[in-house]
Image 1: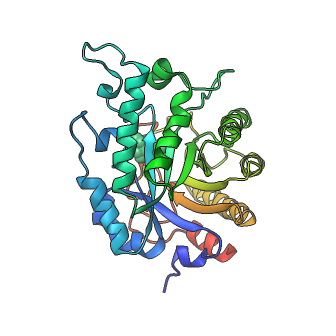
Image 2 (image 1 turned 45 degrees about the horizontal axis):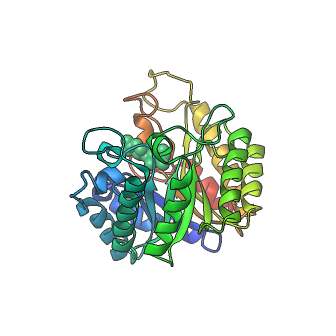
Length: 329
Ligand code: XIL
């Protein structure tokens, strides 16, 4: 039979997949077979759970949590505070202007408290704050409605509220371009300052939306070492290996080229070899999807362009990359 990926890597780290109700319906068997951890792809985001102030919509998130429980899988919670997929009402006062900082904190606390408590028996760790570091320039933080209203204090407050709601949950800061040297240093500086102020933070999430060439292995290694030097846990939270470089807008391919396939096999082998070297600090590796029949990269950054970033093909068969990862373990 086909080895189960999470069993192959048992003793190194959990193996997770981001899922949604459609992928569970279509690939539930594959998901329960190879992965021992789940992340809701969209269903636990603010806009999904709390579309208006008076209304919570838990149905889809609950179904994912029920599936995880029924299969004995762990769950990572994603995400409590972000600039995307967050409803406008959160930032607005009655007249449509920006709400005051005290009121924003009260709304954030109430959201975090409700959500974290609801899932405390399913979710063992939360991406509390997602993507607040600026990609470009000298600025530390990305400008958003959060910073416009509350400066930078919303970050530490989010961790404090989450910790109060569930003192047992592991709390993560999560970001992309995490292996880029300039952004790496900014993420490091933010997390270090949270630690120095005794903010309850337990880990750094490396999203790991990578491609065949970028980032280089040396940069990935440096990022792992830098974050690990803070004495925190690391989770790889959203791994995929896109067949296209970010600026590549080609739409002509209906299947990956031989060259792409070869490069991806080698890339996955190297990535997992590196992860295994750092198994004492990396506790979980989650893919942002289960198999190539559905991936968010089919729409991002080029709408409607197929991509093949995962270890299982469109028919849920293990790809050569899968076997390379298994062989290396
Ligand atoms: C993506 C989902 O995969 C898409 O379905 C959705 O349209 C947009 O968000 N970083 C994150 C994830 O932290 O929440 C994002 O997920 C991908 C990038």
